[in-house]
Length: 158
Image 1: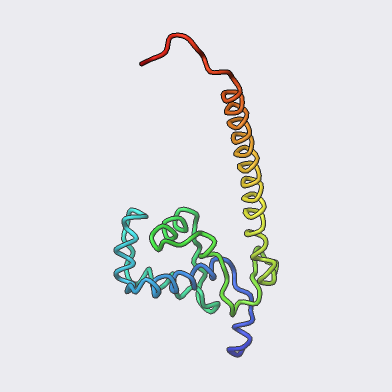
Image 2 (image 1 turned 180 degrees about the vertical axis):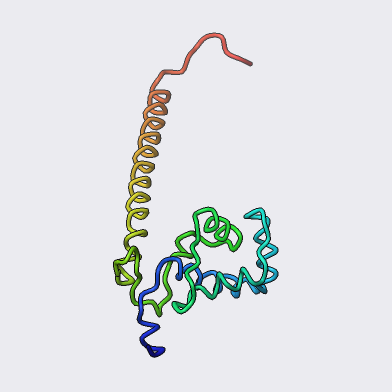
């Protein structure tokens, strides 16, 4: 299989995380040794340079897959100041993604985990806007009532 065929072969989410792990480390300007030391503050243990290298190289389909669990993904996201979504987002070179033996085109894969949070966020924003509007209306009504009462006469302060 030639290099062009390798590039068009779909990657799994684990391989995408591997590729993004390397990209995050390079963007941060860290060596593998430094990243391995820094992860201890987020994961509780250091990674050797060899372990870090193996995790990054697992992006290559000719290498064994490195499985990333949720704890590790959260630790990496916190360490690099990235979102979980960032680590799961395929690169522009990835035309498709394979999940559980099923192939998804890049856009379909992205929609599968980006669309639901967007819809949920829109719903939360609509609920917040409605609640805020109700608070404003309530305060306006109280203010109108207070302004419509005649001023009290009698014992006043001097």
